[in-house]
Amino acid sequence: MATYTPAQLLEDFSIEMTGKDVPGLLEAAPLIPQGTRINVTFLGNEDLQMRLTASKAVLDGGFIPVPHISARRLTSQAQLEEFLGALQAQGTSTHVFSVGGDPSTPEGPYEDSHDVIKTGLLQQYGAQDISIAGYPEGHPDISDEKLWTAITGKHATLTEQGTPGTILTQFGFDEDPVVAWIEKVRAAGIPYEIRVGVPGPAGIKRLLSFAARFGVASSAGIAKKYGLSLTNLMGTAGPDKFIKRLAKKLDPAKHGVVKLHFYTFGGLTATSEWIRDFKEKL
Image (tube, rainbow, N blue to C red; front, side, top):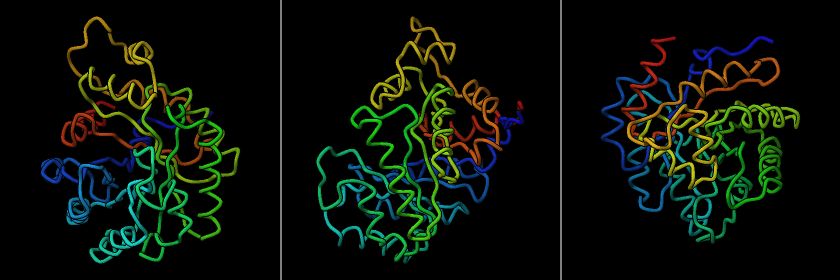
């Protein structure tokens, strides 16, 4: 089996920032390759202008902004169109990520991200590539059956609309469920580029808290995969072992185009420095 190399997986990686983190972007920008996709989150403690300012800063830095559209946070179709129109006006609507969002009860007419995609409004306002979410290790609040119905349904809708898609996965620490899930996606005839979520370097306690919050792994499981001691939670941990193991188990002919997406739990600069240093060691 011909496998990916870690360097190949790292080619054209994507990375994530919040709407508030423009200062972090400006600091990290010299470390990030031009043309990199940078996702801009849609959090409840940020407003429309913050998200727009961050997306424009990404574009102005020579990168590709991928603003998130959080379905359950949208209060109306008018608010969705206001955001999309403003993104289009500043040239940052070509790539978007349609997500469900954290609220358990929708704040407006959209129950989930598929509802937003089905409106066709994303493309009307200039979207040329629409990212959708994947959950290789499941979701704490959504059944596996519902998750699978969602991803196949969104693929079918985007195909009908003639719009390319990208799959962005939840972060994980164990390569085996990721590889098995990618195989299932390919067996279902979904050809999209898959960007596997990777936790950037962060404090061990912080990593464990995020893992617990999103239900992706137990502390013991993370400790085993990362070679950590649960009796000593000081210090930071990076995803080097995960990336190397994942690369060894992926066959481009079988698994298609697979890249990495970094969740910047330890900050944009720390993650960007880690990627640079990891590449230099390969």
